[in-house]
Length: 451
Image (cartoon, rainbow, N blue to C red; front, side, top):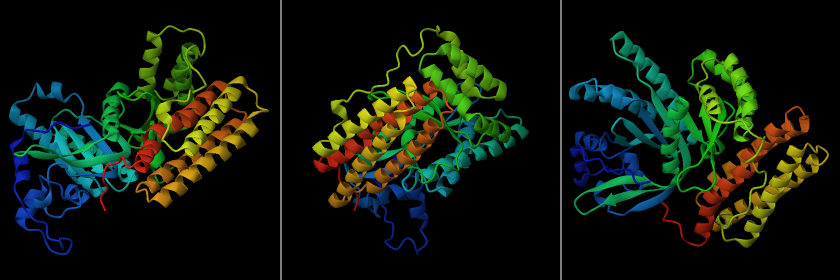
């Protein structure tokens, strides 16, 4: 996604030259250098491999792993209609001044202000982005407390986070150029921020971010939806991070995670009557659960019909899943077939078949993932660690799912939905993003990477 070039005069300063000393880490920056750094992030220059803005040329680009964060003030248009232009600027600047140091403190930097929205980049770690987002929400609580003491309305924000491989570079013309970040990872982060409005929740992350975290256990995370993003054939799983909720709400959500996901499984499998019952029970336990209330309202707007009329266990193999390496493509196809077989067995309640199917699936996944990682190391693929992290996270969720299946304590419909979401849907999305990029690398079609 190419973000709009903002026509604000200060950004023309990007055309003026300045130099960051090679030993800038030891020498204090001059006033001029500090001033330019407020308009052109030094981190952006470093990602391009430069210390001197005079060396940056139009069209320069590098590929890098990035976690992208979008945040937006809620209902700012309606709020601004009751204020003068000066009051609008005062509100924006007072809010943005609170957020910028929080992002910087967690290893991120602001790439753009888009009106009342922030686009921030976290080059090092998705964990830093998630922790930074939670810190932003905590800082917002402090900011709102001050607004209320001064007699002003509190404000709300929504944050969307996604992790992936992006191209960072310069676009524009001879007289005006701008830095930007392009890629599907940016599109999905922006989409997630928009979805926070639909569910009235403050923070959403993608499954790519979830699977890229160092350790997801410390966070309070729950599955929220499967959504289609423009230009993508397969649905994307969306997760809510609710650590910044008030303690009673956070505790109630954690204690009722399974109940809530049972309800969502029934909803997505078109068993609306069961979904409504479970959502009503969820709201009895968590009266302030906005997402549960949204889903219950959706149930009321739909007509209950036959159970599982549109849900299919089998995910068909598509040409889009191929990366161009025959052995790996065949192994992926076999792995998808194993997942389909497991889902069908779980739905049919044939518990005698599931242990062998689980063993077969685990062996197939181990074989193909090891082969991929070995080839990546041999060929010097720059994003091997990101790819490996996602494989590791897959096995963590597979083992969790295996325990649930082997315990026999969960309903087949719920487990079937879990198989589809955590296994076959994940594999499809992994193949068309991470694996496809590796295939392009093998064919020499990826963009240049920073040394």
